[in-house]
Image (cartoon, rainbow, N blue to C red):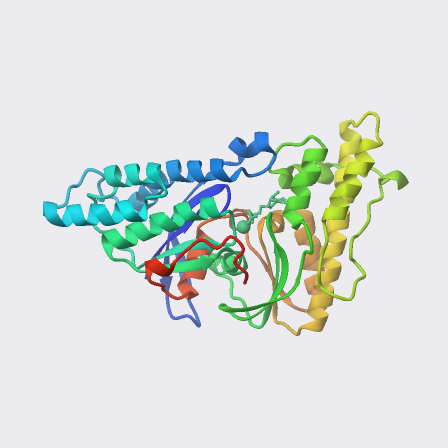
Length: 385
Ligand code: KG4
Ligand code: ZN
Protein backbone atom coordinates (compact mmCIF):
# COMPACT_ATOMS: atom_id res chain seq x y z
CA UNK A 1 0.00 0.00 0.00
CA UNK A 2 1.26 3.48 -0.86
CA UNK A 3 0.47 6.24 1.61
CA UNK A 4 0.71 9.91 0.75
CA UNK A 5 1.21 11.98 3.90
CA UNK A 6 0.77 15.71 4.42
CA UNK A 7 2.00 17.65 7.45
CA UNK A 8 1.29 21.38 7.99
CA UNK A 9 0.66 21.66 11.73
CA UNK A 10 3.34 24.25 12.45
CA UNK A 11 6.12 25.85 10.39
CA UNK A 12 7.22 22.91 8.24
CA UNK A 13 5.40 22.04 5.04
CA UNK A 14 6.05 18.34 4.48
CA UNK A 15 4.88 15.70 2.00
CA UNK A 16 6.00 12.10 1.55
CA UNK A 17 5.03 8.81 -0.03
CA UNK A 18 5.64 5.75 2.10
CA UNK A 19 5.12 2.16 1.07
CA UNK A 20 3.77 -0.19 3.72
CA UNK A 21 3.88 -3.96 3.37
CA UNK A 22 2.59 -6.61 5.77
CA UNK A 23 -0.24 -6.26 8.26
CA UNK A 24 -0.64 -3.98 11.28
CA UNK A 25 1.18 -6.54 13.48
CA UNK A 26 4.40 -6.60 11.47
CA UNK A 27 4.50 -3.76 9.00
CA UNK A 28 7.55 -3.06 6.88
CA UNK A 29 7.92 0.50 5.67
CA UNK A 30 9.87 1.84 2.75
CA UNK A 31 10.20 5.55 2.13
CA UNK A 32 9.75 6.21 -1.58
CA UNK A 33 9.83 9.99 -1.69
CA UNK A 34 10.10 12.73 0.90
CA UNK A 35 10.07 16.54 0.77
CA UNK A 36 10.09 19.25 3.39
CA UNK A 37 10.18 23.01 3.35
CA UNK A 38 11.02 24.76 6.61
CA UNK A 39 9.65 28.25 7.18
CA UNK A 40 11.80 28.74 10.31
CA UNK A 41 13.86 31.56 8.81
CA UNK A 42 10.71 33.54 7.96
CA UNK A 43 9.36 33.27 11.49
CA UNK A 44 12.65 34.32 13.03
CA UNK A 45 11.77 38.00 13.31
CA UNK A 46 8.66 37.11 15.33
CA UNK A 47 10.73 34.95 17.69
CA UNK A 48 8.22 32.14 17.23
CA UNK A 49 5.72 30.80 14.74
CA UNK A 50 3.29 33.41 13.43
CA UNK A 51 0.11 31.44 12.51
CA UNK A 52 -1.10 33.49 9.55
CA UNK A 53 2.31 33.63 7.97
CA UNK A 54 2.55 29.84 8.41
CA UNK A 55 -0.82 29.44 6.70
CA UNK A 56 0.16 31.63 3.73
CA UNK A 57 3.45 29.83 3.31
CA UNK A 58 1.82 26.38 3.42
CA UNK A 59 -0.63 27.54 0.71
CA UNK A 60 2.23 28.72 -1.43
CA UNK A 61 4.48 25.67 -1.00
CA UNK A 62 2.18 22.68 -0.76
CA UNK A 63 1.42 22.16 -4.47
CA UNK A 64 5.07 22.45 -5.69
CA UNK A 65 6.20 20.17 -2.85
CA UNK A 66 3.49 17.63 -3.68
CA UNK A 67 4.40 17.59 -7.38
CA UNK A 68 8.09 17.17 -6.57
CA UNK A 69 7.31 14.26 -4.23
CA UNK A 70 5.05 12.55 -6.73
CA UNK A 71 7.44 12.90 -9.65
CA UNK A 72 10.04 10.89 -7.80
CA UNK A 73 7.84 7.79 -7.72
CA UNK A 74 6.16 8.32 -11.07
CA UNK A 75 8.76 9.86 -13.36
CA UNK A 76 6.48 9.66 -16.37
CA UNK A 77 3.85 11.54 -14.52
CA UNK A 78 3.82 14.78 -16.39
CA UNK A 79 2.54 18.05 -15.15
CA UNK A 80 1.26 18.92 -18.58
CA UNK A 81 -0.69 15.72 -19.22
CA UNK A 82 -4.29 16.53 -19.91
CA UNK A 83 -6.92 13.91 -19.27
CA UNK A 84 -9.84 13.34 -21.54
CA UNK A 85 -12.43 14.25 -18.98
CA UNK A 86 -15.59 15.52 -20.56
CA UNK A 87 -16.19 19.15 -19.80
CA UNK A 88 -19.38 18.49 -17.83
CA UNK A 89 -17.59 16.16 -15.44
CA UNK A 90 -14.71 18.58 -15.11
CA UNK A 91 -17.05 21.42 -14.29
CA UNK A 92 -18.71 19.38 -11.55
CA UNK A 93 -15.30 18.41 -10.13
CA UNK A 94 -14.10 21.96 -10.30
CA UNK A 95 -17.15 23.17 -8.38
CA UNK A 96 -16.56 20.61 -5.65
CA UNK A 97 -12.92 21.59 -5.37
CA UNK A 98 -13.84 25.24 -5.15
CA UNK A 99 -16.05 24.48 -2.16
CA UNK A 100 -13.35 22.36 -0.49
CA UNK A 101 -10.62 24.94 -1.01
CA UNK A 102 -12.80 27.94 -0.32
CA UNK A 103 -10.75 29.05 2.67
CA UNK A 104 -7.41 28.65 0.86
CA UNK A 105 -7.64 30.86 -2.27
CA UNK A 106 -3.98 30.59 -3.25
CA UNK A 107 -4.05 26.83 -2.91
CA UNK A 108 -7.20 26.65 -5.05
CA UNK A 109 -5.56 28.66 -7.80
CA UNK A 110 -2.50 26.41 -7.87
CA UNK A 111 -4.66 23.29 -7.63
CA UNK A 112 -6.74 24.24 -10.67
CA UNK A 113 -3.67 25.16 -12.66
CA UNK A 114 -1.35 22.29 -11.77
CA UNK A 115 -3.31 19.32 -10.45
CA UNK A 116 -6.83 19.27 -11.85
CA UNK A 117 -5.75 17.79 -15.19
CA UNK A 118 -3.32 15.21 -13.88
CA UNK A 119 -3.92 11.47 -14.15
CA UNK A 120 -4.63 9.61 -10.91
CA UNK A 121 -1.37 8.52 -9.26
CA UNK A 122 -0.85 5.12 -7.61
CA UNK A 123 -1.70 6.15 -4.06
CA UNK A 124 -3.95 4.07 -1.81
CA UNK A 125 -4.57 6.47 1.03
CA UNK A 126 -3.89 10.01 2.12
CA UNK A 127 -2.77 10.63 5.70
CA UNK A 128 -3.07 14.18 6.97
CA UNK A 129 -2.27 15.83 10.30
CA UNK A 130 -5.47 17.15 11.91
CA UNK A 131 -3.99 18.24 15.26
CA UNK A 132 -2.63 19.24 17.64
CA UNK A 133 -1.17 22.36 16.07
CA UNK A 134 -2.03 25.80 14.72
CA UNK A 135 -5.53 25.59 13.23
CA UNK A 136 -4.99 28.01 10.31
CA UNK A 137 -1.91 25.99 9.35
CA UNK A 138 -3.58 22.60 9.85
CA UNK A 139 -6.50 23.61 7.62
CA UNK A 140 -4.23 24.10 4.61
CA UNK A 141 -3.06 20.48 4.70
CA UNK A 142 -6.53 19.18 5.49
CA UNK A 143 -8.23 21.11 2.67
CA UNK A 144 -5.55 19.94 0.27
CA UNK A 145 -6.00 16.31 1.33
CA UNK A 146 -9.77 16.61 0.87
CA UNK A 147 -9.37 18.14 -2.58
CA UNK A 148 -7.04 15.34 -3.70
CA UNK A 149 -9.45 12.79 -2.29
CA UNK A 150 -12.40 14.33 -4.12
CA UNK A 151 -10.48 14.56 -7.38
CA UNK A 152 -9.07 11.02 -7.41
CA UNK A 153 -11.36 9.13 -5.09
CA UNK A 154 -8.67 8.20 -2.57
CA UNK A 155 -9.63 7.72 1.11
CA UNK A 156 -8.30 10.09 3.79
CA UNK A 157 -7.11 9.15 7.27
CA UNK A 158 -6.89 11.90 9.89
CA UNK A 159 -3.67 11.67 11.95
CA UNK A 160 -2.73 12.89 15.42
CA UNK A 161 0.65 14.61 15.14
CA UNK A 162 1.82 13.29 18.54
CA UNK A 163 1.12 9.69 17.49
CA UNK A 164 3.37 10.47 14.55
CA UNK A 165 6.19 11.53 16.87
CA UNK A 166 5.72 8.35 18.90
CA UNK A 167 5.64 5.98 15.91
CA UNK A 168 8.42 7.65 13.88
CA UNK A 169 11.12 5.02 14.70
CA UNK A 170 9.08 2.40 12.77
CA UNK A 171 9.95 4.24 9.54
CA UNK A 172 13.60 3.39 10.17
CA UNK A 173 13.01 -0.34 10.52
CA UNK A 174 12.78 -0.35 14.33
CA UNK A 175 10.24 -2.44 16.23
CA UNK A 176 8.37 -1.02 19.20
CA UNK A 177 7.65 -3.74 21.75
CA UNK A 178 4.44 -2.99 23.63
CA UNK A 179 3.50 -1.86 26.20
CA UNK A 180 5.76 1.12 25.62
CA UNK A 181 6.40 4.39 27.38
CA UNK A 182 6.66 7.51 25.22
CA UNK A 183 8.48 10.65 26.26
CA UNK A 184 7.25 13.20 23.75
CA UNK A 185 9.20 16.44 23.90
CA UNK A 186 8.42 18.99 21.20
CA UNK A 187 7.86 22.71 20.74
CA UNK A 188 4.21 22.48 21.72
CA UNK A 189 4.08 19.42 23.99
CA UNK A 190 5.82 17.59 26.79
CA UNK A 191 4.10 14.34 27.64
CA UNK A 192 4.73 10.94 29.14
CA UNK A 193 2.40 8.41 27.55
CA UNK A 194 1.81 4.70 27.96
CA UNK A 195 0.91 2.91 24.73
CA UNK A 196 -0.73 -0.53 24.71
CA UNK A 197 -0.46 -0.74 20.93
CA UNK A 198 0.06 1.74 18.06
CA UNK A 199 -3.46 3.12 18.47
CA UNK A 200 -4.19 3.20 22.25
CA UNK A 201 -2.48 5.80 24.38
CA UNK A 202 -2.85 7.07 27.92
CA UNK A 203 -1.21 10.31 29.02
CA UNK A 204 0.38 9.70 32.45
CA UNK A 205 2.23 13.01 32.79
CA UNK A 206 2.50 16.34 31.03
CA UNK A 207 3.69 19.90 31.38
CA UNK A 208 1.52 22.19 33.47
CA UNK A 209 2.74 25.25 31.55
CA UNK A 210 5.37 25.61 28.78
CA UNK A 211 6.58 22.74 26.63
CA UNK A 212 10.20 21.67 26.80
CA UNK A 213 11.08 22.89 23.27
CA UNK A 214 9.22 26.13 23.96
CA UNK A 215 11.49 26.71 26.97
CA UNK A 216 14.54 26.14 24.75
CA UNK A 217 13.18 28.65 22.23
CA UNK A 218 12.39 31.26 24.90
CA UNK A 219 15.78 30.87 26.59
CA UNK A 220 17.42 31.28 23.17
CA UNK A 221 15.54 34.54 22.72
CA UNK A 222 16.60 35.77 26.17
CA UNK A 223 20.20 34.95 25.27
CA UNK A 224 19.88 36.71 21.91
CA UNK A 225 20.18 33.53 19.85
CA UNK A 226 18.23 32.94 16.61
CA UNK A 227 14.95 31.01 16.25
CA UNK A 228 14.36 28.03 16.45
CA UNK A 229 16.39 28.25 19.60
CA UNK A 230 16.68 24.60 20.62
CA UNK A 231 19.64 23.69 18.40
CA UNK A 232 21.33 27.06 19.15
CA UNK A 233 21.14 26.65 22.93
CA UNK A 234 22.27 23.05 22.55
CA UNK A 235 25.24 24.15 20.44
CA UNK A 236 26.64 26.64 22.96
CA UNK A 237 25.84 24.37 25.90
CA UNK A 238 27.89 21.66 24.27
CA UNK A 239 30.75 24.15 23.66
CA UNK A 240 30.68 24.98 27.38
CA UNK A 241 30.86 21.28 28.25
CA UNK A 242 33.78 20.63 25.93
CA UNK A 243 35.60 23.73 27.23
CA UNK A 244 34.89 22.38 30.70
CA UNK A 245 33.68 25.79 31.83
CA UNK A 246 32.80 25.58 35.48
CA UNK A 247 29.24 26.33 36.51
CA UNK A 248 29.69 29.20 38.91
CA UNK A 249 27.33 29.28 41.85
CA UNK A 250 25.53 32.36 40.48
CA UNK A 251 24.55 30.37 37.40
CA UNK A 252 22.66 27.65 39.23
CA UNK A 253 19.09 27.20 37.98
CA UNK A 254 16.14 25.37 39.58
CA UNK A 255 14.92 21.87 38.58
CA UNK A 256 11.15 22.58 38.60
CA UNK A 257 8.88 19.82 39.92
CA UNK A 258 11.73 17.30 39.97
CA UNK A 259 10.65 15.86 43.31
CA UNK A 260 6.87 15.99 42.97
CA UNK A 261 5.12 12.62 43.26
CA UNK A 262 3.34 12.95 39.92
CA UNK A 263 4.80 12.64 36.42
CA UNK A 264 4.12 16.24 35.44
CA UNK A 265 6.59 18.88 34.31
CA UNK A 266 6.91 22.65 34.48
CA UNK A 267 9.29 24.71 32.34
CA UNK A 268 7.90 28.22 32.57
CA UNK A 269 9.60 28.99 35.92
CA UNK A 270 12.91 27.75 34.57
CA UNK A 271 12.71 30.18 31.66
CA UNK A 272 11.80 33.02 34.05
CA UNK A 273 14.75 32.10 36.26
CA UNK A 274 17.02 32.47 33.22
CA UNK A 275 15.43 35.84 32.44
CA UNK A 276 16.00 37.19 35.98
CA UNK A 277 19.53 35.84 35.94
CA UNK A 278 20.32 37.57 32.66
CA UNK A 279 18.76 40.86 33.80
CA UNK A 280 21.27 40.99 36.65
CA UNK A 281 24.29 40.52 34.38
CA UNK A 282 25.71 43.85 33.15
CA UNK A 283 27.72 42.45 30.24
CA UNK A 284 26.27 39.27 28.82
CA UNK A 285 29.14 37.94 26.72
CA UNK A 286 29.33 34.66 24.84
CA UNK A 287 31.21 32.83 27.61
CA UNK A 288 28.48 33.67 30.13
CA UNK A 289 25.79 32.69 27.61
CA UNK A 290 27.49 29.33 27.17
CA UNK A 291 27.50 28.72 30.92
CA UNK A 292 23.84 29.66 31.27
CA UNK A 293 22.87 27.48 28.30
CA UNK A 294 24.80 24.58 29.81
CA UNK A 295 23.11 24.96 33.19
CA UNK A 296 19.69 25.31 31.53
CA UNK A 297 20.23 22.13 29.50
CA UNK A 298 21.46 20.34 32.62
CA UNK A 299 18.26 21.31 34.42
CA UNK A 300 16.02 20.14 31.55
CA UNK A 301 17.99 16.88 31.32
CA UNK A 302 17.79 16.25 35.09
CA UNK A 303 14.02 16.74 35.16
CA UNK A 304 13.34 14.67 32.02
CA UNK A 305 15.53 11.81 33.24
CA UNK A 306 14.07 11.81 36.76
CA UNK A 307 10.44 11.83 35.61
CA UNK A 308 11.07 9.20 32.95
CA UNK A 309 12.78 7.03 35.57
CA UNK A 310 9.75 7.41 37.82
CA UNK A 311 7.42 6.51 34.94
CA UNK A 312 9.50 3.44 34.01
CA UNK A 313 9.32 2.25 37.61
CA UNK A 314 5.57 2.85 37.80
CA UNK A 315 4.59 1.30 34.48
CA UNK A 316 6.21 -1.94 33.45
CA UNK A 317 7.00 -1.37 29.80
CA UNK A 318 9.23 -3.07 27.24
CA UNK A 319 10.27 -0.04 25.22
CA UNK A 320 10.98 3.63 25.90
CA UNK A 321 10.31 5.78 22.83
CA UNK A 322 11.61 9.34 22.84
CA UNK A 323 10.07 11.58 20.19
CA UNK A 324 9.58 15.22 19.20
CA UNK A 325 12.03 17.97 18.26
CA UNK A 326 13.93 17.99 21.58
CA UNK A 327 14.76 14.29 21.12
CA UNK A 328 17.21 15.54 18.47
CA UNK A 329 19.29 16.86 21.39
CA UNK A 330 22.41 14.69 21.69
CA UNK A 331 23.04 15.42 25.37
CA UNK A 332 19.47 14.64 26.48
CA UNK A 333 19.40 11.57 24.25
CA UNK A 334 22.66 10.28 25.75
CA UNK A 335 21.33 10.56 29.30
CA UNK A 336 18.03 8.88 28.43
CA UNK A 337 20.04 6.04 26.88
CA UNK A 338 21.99 5.65 30.13
CA UNK A 339 18.70 5.57 32.04
CA UNK A 340 17.19 2.95 29.72
CA UNK A 341 20.25 0.75 30.16
CA UNK A 342 20.01 1.04 33.93
CA UNK A 343 16.28 0.25 33.88
CA UNK A 344 16.77 -2.56 31.34
CA UNK A 345 14.33 -1.33 28.71
CA UNK A 346 14.86 -0.99 25.01
CA UNK A 347 15.12 2.67 23.92
CA UNK A 348 14.19 4.08 20.52
CA UNK A 349 15.03 7.60 19.40
CA UNK A 350 14.59 8.56 15.75
CA UNK A 351 17.39 10.06 13.76
CA UNK A 352 17.39 13.88 13.68
CA UNK A 353 15.39 14.32 10.47
CA UNK A 354 12.56 12.17 11.85
CA UNK A 355 12.71 13.67 15.37
CA UNK A 356 11.62 17.13 14.26
CA UNK A 357 8.41 17.63 12.28
CA UNK A 358 8.17 15.66 9.04
CA UNK A 359 5.62 13.84 6.87
CA UNK A 360 7.14 10.36 7.24
CA UNK A 361 5.93 9.97 10.82
CA UNK A 362 2.45 11.05 9.69
CA UNK A 363 2.45 8.35 7.02
CA UNK A 364 3.44 5.71 9.60
CA UNK A 365 0.70 6.83 12.03
CA UNK A 366 -1.70 7.00 9.07
CA UNK A 367 -1.01 3.34 8.33
CA UNK A 368 -2.59 2.42 11.70
CA UNK A 369 -5.36 5.06 11.66
CA UNK A 370 -8.93 4.70 10.40
CA UNK A 371 -10.38 6.35 7.32
CA UNK A 372 -13.04 9.00 7.78
CA UNK A 373 -15.44 10.62 5.33
CA UNK A 374 -13.92 13.95 4.28
CA UNK A 375 -17.00 15.84 5.43
CA UNK A 376 -16.17 14.76 9.01
CA UNK A 377 -12.50 15.73 8.96
CA UNK A 378 -11.56 19.02 10.61
CA UNK A 379 -8.61 20.75 12.28
CA UNK A 380 -8.41 20.22 16.03
CA UNK A 381 -5.78 22.55 17.47
CA UNK A 382 -5.91 20.96 20.93
CA UNK A 383 -6.34 17.34 19.86
CA UNK A 384 -5.18 15.05 22.64
CA UNK A 385 -3.68 11.58 22.39
O1 KG4 B 1 8.56 18.33 17.11
P1 KG4 B 1 8.96 19.65 16.60
O2 KG4 B 1 9.76 19.72 15.34
O3 KG4 B 1 7.71 20.57 16.40
C1 KG4 B 1 6.60 20.53 17.26
O4 KG4 B 1 5.77 19.63 17.09
O5 KG4 B 1 6.57 21.43 18.13
O6 KG4 B 1 9.78 20.35 17.78
C2 KG4 B 1 10.32 21.62 17.63
C3 KG4 B 1 11.02 21.99 18.90
C4 KG4 B 1 11.50 23.44 18.92
O7 KG4 B 1 11.12 24.03 20.14
C5 KG4 B 1 13.00 23.32 18.79
O8 KG4 B 1 13.69 24.39 19.41
C6 KG4 B 1 13.26 22.01 19.49
O9 KG4 B 1 12.19 21.18 19.10
N1 KG4 B 1 14.54 21.41 19.11
C7 KG4 B 1 15.55 21.19 19.99
C8 KG4 B 1 16.62 20.65 19.23
N2 KG4 B 1 16.20 20.54 17.93
C9 KG4 B 1 14.93 21.00 17.89
N3 KG4 B 1 15.66 21.43 21.30
C10 KG4 B 1 16.81 21.11 21.91
N4 KG4 B 1 17.88 20.60 21.26
C11 KG4 B 1 17.83 20.34 19.93
N5 KG4 B 1 18.88 19.83 19.30
ZN1 ZN C 1 6.01 18.01 16.23
